[in-house]
Image 1 (tube, one colour):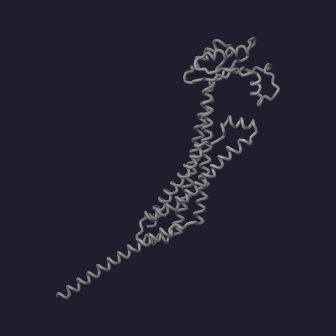
Image 2: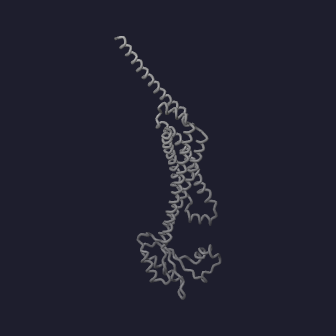
Image 3: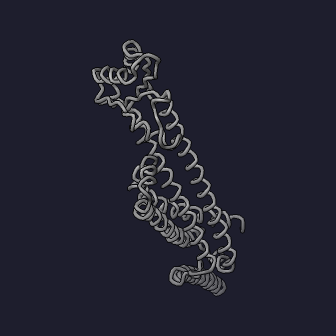
Length: 335
């Protein structure tokens, strides 16, 4: 039976060679498919209506996030400046008492304060300055002599940490009739509370913006995969890994997110610059003084601009990660 055995061996060899050839052809086809997809980017079409729409949505979201960050930074810096000013100043009030020379008592209170440890200066506010302070509420032409208006002494502290305000208040009460000390602790506490609330509100708005961006990317990614379902199916059939498909979508949406994020950050930076260099000089002197008192120079500063740039890159990274996870989820549901 040598002939039969030889024929069987020949048939087995031909079958093995055919299987090996088929595997080589399939592997070559897979490599060609992957190279073609990388070169032609047919898996994720470029410059589509949905892609452009997502870029605009991301730009708007980034713009809103940057504006929120700028507003929070502005309010926080202003509150910090107010708090610093309040901590370095206290006010002495000398109430009018019948039969007592209020001006003389105010001068005595200023002298007592100047001699106290840690006090840099103590200045009595003149009647003209007091009248100017009351004009916004009581109008012009005031005669302070006819009103029981207390005299004010502004005390500036050289080092608030070494000043014993309780001891100063006791000394004033003992040596100056009608004198009380206001250390502005109530205002300082309110400013701290306002700054914290502003930061929490800003973080809440940023969280909502990021959530809306993530949802937009999820819907855009699923829509793009649904529109290219045939291509994805063919790639799966020839053995393309999920990681390859996910990387293609991740790269595409990361570029869209980066483009939209930079557009939004640039628009926000333009608004910051416009507010700082155009609106402030155009205000009247009174309005400019009030704005400076509330918001300082009304400039966001380097923190706002760097924060806007950081938000743009953060959105790009978030877009890439979201699209990648969405692709994996979509492929798992399709199997």
